[in-house]
Image 1 (cartoon, rainbow, N blue to C red):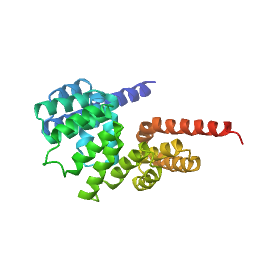
Image 2: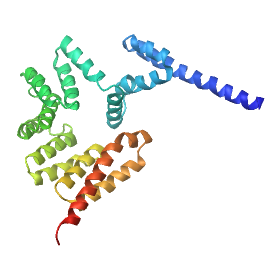
Image 3: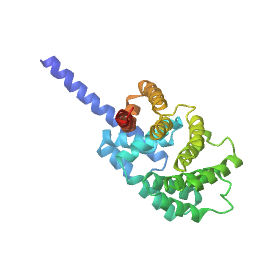
Image 4: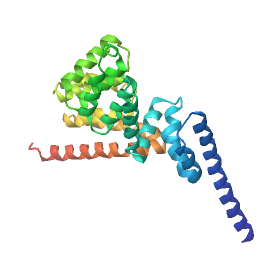
Length: 266
């Protein structure tokens, strides 16, 4: 029994030591990168939880990681602190109303379902300096899409393609696919979805699957769902947990579609 007690005591001390060591590393990172002082307080008062939040909120977004991981970290931050990001972006924009801060603030407004506010912000900043800036125009097109102004979204993506045909090909195609769907231009939507899903990104495949369901293309929807399952299987546990809601949404939509088909007269 004494030996077992010694083991648990050792493990506990070691565990706490690891937490503190990780928190210390993040504290050094915070100091070197000029992060606000409150991060040091969080890291040392709550070493484990503080390290997790710092990892998602600061370290991952600043690191040179793949695009998909960057998206996951932003989503995780939104879950952990749903209002912090948009409030921070708003404060930065109000203090320094630059184009860059306007685009960042607009991005968070769109994510929060406030597309009309994002459009107003971007309209104020639409000058000759940014009229040929693909990043600015992409955010503007996204805001119009979310605000159900599909024709405007298509017009802006046309301009992006004329400025730089290679700019975020799949993301621009996704905007065009969703805008075409809003306008009931389903063949255009289909063609753009094919382009948008070439890299098999889970979010874009999910949009493709939902479109197939909404347009009563059951066989295509099942095929896309199978592709999503493959991505699900090889993904990390964190990625699977993060994407679980959209998988549930697709499965429910597929189930509802099958019920409607079953009720149709022969």
